[in-house]
Image 1 (spheres, each protein chain N blue to C red):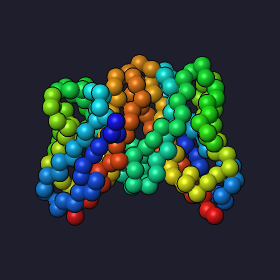
Image 2 (tube, helix red, strand yellow):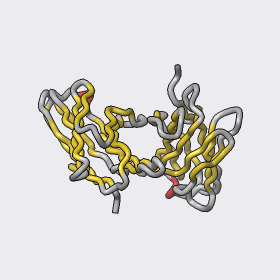
Image 3 (cartoon, each protein chain N blue to C red):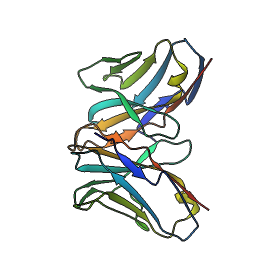
Image 4 (cartoon, rainbow over the protein chains, first blue to last red):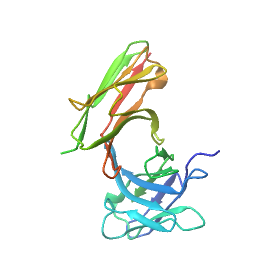
Length: 113
Length: 112
């Protein structure tokens, strides 16, 4: 049973471009969570999704950021018109149910030039 | 102010020594507390999870304690190994909605 998979592992974008981060949850997990980790800081919750639904996006910036978890395929975190401050590690976690332990992926390191 | 405070921010110890990491929280109502280990360049991996009624939980050389009255937890690492070098993150869940509140972590370096 493969763990949570994220790709790409490293992503470099220039200011103004779009970044798309993908997360495939563990088999049997229908709950996905996205977190952002700035250098030398702790993880910050961004958004919690179930299949085809956004359950909690209270940690998501109001502009330029969006997330989806379609019926088929991975969850996508999309950042439009990236700025240097978006440079961070973005982690995805999944769980089989809402109150269960979350299993983390290896993260995507986004660098905005 | 973060609802989960960890100390020390960083720690260097010699291989074979023991160490204790601290976590104080103000999260309420409390559901559970987890300790995660995050190796450099990797995602966090769960070490222990404790609910309100549990005051100690072990996982190999890792022992976590919880005092729900004082809202303090500690992670004790025995006979440290080089592979213990990592960040250790305390995460407290809120009972009402299971939100997870993350501490900033303690960066542990074990030197030979």
